[in-house]
Amino acid sequence: MPQFKHAIVITGSIGSGKSTVCKILAGRGFEIIDADSIAHEQLNLCASEVAAEFGSEVLNGGKIDRKKLGALAFRDAGKLKILERILHPKIRLEILSRAAKLESAGRTYFVDIPLFFERRDAYKEFSRVAVVYAPKDTLISRVMKRNELSYDASKRRVELQIDIEEKRAAANFTIENVGDFENLKNETLKFLSEISSKPCT
Image (cartoon, rainbow, N blue to C red; front, side):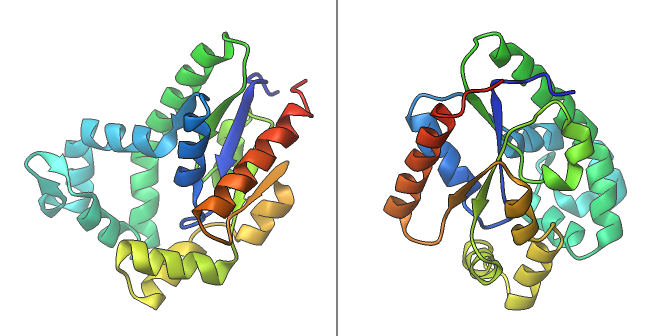
């Protein structure tokens, strides 16, 4: 049963613009729990465990080289599952711990969980979800540009996740990101107006 009634999950797909939406929300004074930031923290805390699975070449000065690790993990579904098995329980516990603290303030806050729908059973405590949406072709183009990857490599990363259309259909709210930054900012403000008219229950 959901217990974090003041939380709204922000999710989407790789390349959809979740981080930018969360920056806009933070700029409006909202608290953000960032699963990616937590993942980076946890990744270095368990660097030796990760290196034991992926090899010492993923280390750089005792810390994980995320680009090298990503190249290995996203190329092999089995390796990706191993990485998730190591990291995800730790990430989940930290997210829930931070949410419990924010819940007591009694005001809306946001939880950026990129793979919320892929792991929905692990996050039953959250009932309200907003998807940052862009069409699949746009997602692939953005990943190509941002990560300096080929079309095939970018397409593979996008397709490792649940299809963005399925996510949009399953969400409570949609934030469209199909234009420039100003358009996304306006869409995010529309979303804030919508949630203010639908108080948590």
